[in-house]
Image (cartoon, rainbow, N blue to C red; front, side, top):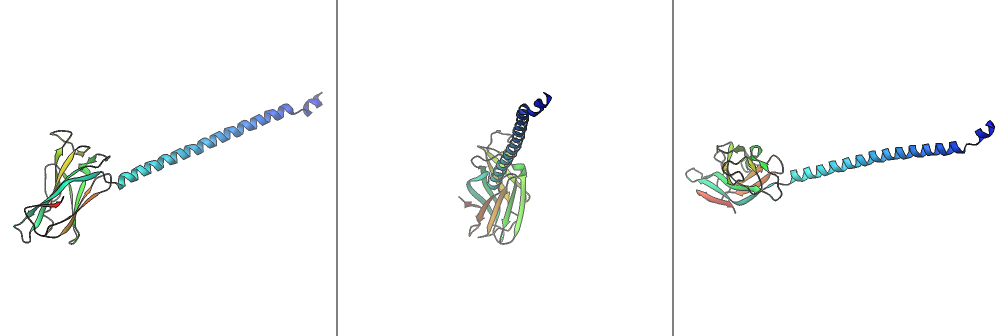
Length: 198
């Protein structure tokens, strides 16, 4: 009787097959979970990279209205002393911290290059001044250029020799996003007030 029981292995074969099947299903489930998790992680990182790239490649500000310059007609030769322009956020642009925004003025012909940082009080050879035209904070504006706000920027150019017919570039560099270059050309005759770009 014992010999007959050992030869009958039908119950053991079914149990072993069930254990092997459960093991394969478990391993496949874990493997697929790991693969799907890695795929989702890679996709998320790819999306973040694309969004960051778009933010860095596109400028979040734009020019509003004309660029006006003041000239010194008493100097020899006559030269431009400051330039004024108005900025606002581009459609869908993120708020810009003007405390961290740098304005660079470059005169390609001379190789002159000056950087200006933000100041809401001082206008000199190292600071540009901002006057808020539309501010969401009323009389006490913060230093962020936000949606529906306009900031009039004045840059003093006394330390640069920008004379008649000189090309120069005013570049606004926000902390996030692409810089915004404004290519300008001095007129053939320097006046007290000039419109350089309409």
